[in-house]
Amino acid sequence: MKVVLLNPYRERSDHVAPDLGLGYLAAWTRKAGHDITLIDPNNARISREDLHARLLELGPEVVGIKVFTQDLSSARETFKFLRVHLPSAVLVAGGAHPSAVPEQVLNTLPEVDYAFRGEAEIGFARFLDFLCGSCAIEDVPGLIWRDGSGIRINDQVFIKNLDELGIPAWDLIDPRDYSDTAETFRKAFPAAPISITRGCPFPCTYCAGHIISGKPIRSRSIEHVLNEMQYLMTEFGVKEFNIVDDNFTHNRAVVESFCRGIIDRKLDISWSGSTGIRLDSLDEELLGLMRRSGCYSFYVGIESGSQRILDLMKKHLTLDKIRQGVQMINRSGIDVSGFFIIGFPGETRNDIIDTIAFAAELPLFKAHFFHFTALPATEAYDSLATAGKIAGFDDSMFMDVSYVPDGMTPHELKSLLRKAYLTFYLRPAVISRLLLRLGSARQLRLILKKMINYFFNTTAAGRKDSRV
Image (cartoon, rainbow, N blue to C red; front, side, top):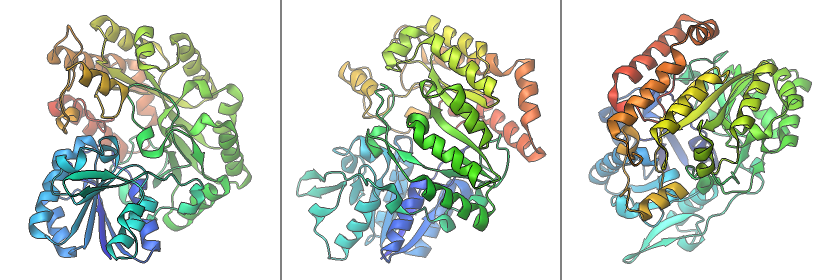
């Protein structure tokens, strides 16, 4: 079958990278004999009209769109266009949003024929078998479908041996095509994301990461990972890798094997982590090994400078442990950056001021502050919905302040977020450190562009991809 997989169009996206999820899905379905085209309009910098024209030109039999909650309205617009102009095409929604609200997604996106929850590699290939008449619909893992006037949701299947997935279809997500939209402070280009583990067992109340890949952590074999890295180095000239796992350091043995494998194979690469490594999974010995294998930077999820709020978030961390952990990473020679949330339910203005001060106190390379967003399927969302403090969800949740703690106003919360960035970054030591890390004029242009977008584009204050 002729299949197109794509990310929804976004008006502006400062941080774009090869999409591993679509890459794995493309590789798996192509292996089954299907004709796969993958489109990332945000990296290609094409307009919505150009995207729609490209879809008409391709004339696919099946179109699958990866949908985050923030992309609902954009995905809906493309689905509506396709339903009118390619009426015979089968339209499928996948990704985080359908996984979070499987009972509602086909009502929210009425033009869509089917949706998937969770990991979809096995299910999507079997779904295509169903469309070809060689599989029963009940046997498609994770499928969300209409059965008369009701909605049916098939059980998810999590692949146990991740090596069986192979590697993403890198020819369709060529890392050389992403140099203008990648993380500003990369040491080397081209850079490629890589996934080693899947799953998250932690109970953080603001996060729904487990809805895609489950709670148990599964890992690829390190030999399989290293072979993929060498393939990317040889075929695409990749010089740096960014580990995108939610919990890469959860299993110490996996990290040690990965680092020793890089050293033993004498791979001349740098690597980093971008999704928030847990501080309580690190120690000096492990950090030293990571540094020797080429690790130079990663993020940690700090979230708040108020112990009361950390407890409400169920972070299972203390402020003292955070201080000690950040200082330990700093001593190892690895740049450590932090993620922070502003406006969590129950937070006061004083709590936020404490968070801003805490971020400035820590020896962080960078800090990212985000408005709290009540993501569907999280404990925080369920609590707020039950209390009647939020209603529904759409992409405006990511474009502006979607929730304001009691006793505060949206304007005040926006001002505090801006204060957080200004307080952290407008310090001579921070500015000089960032400038010293810039490796080219191109990187300087990137950071200036992102700063202008953040400070002068008021609609971008809360977006998850507005990163400096």
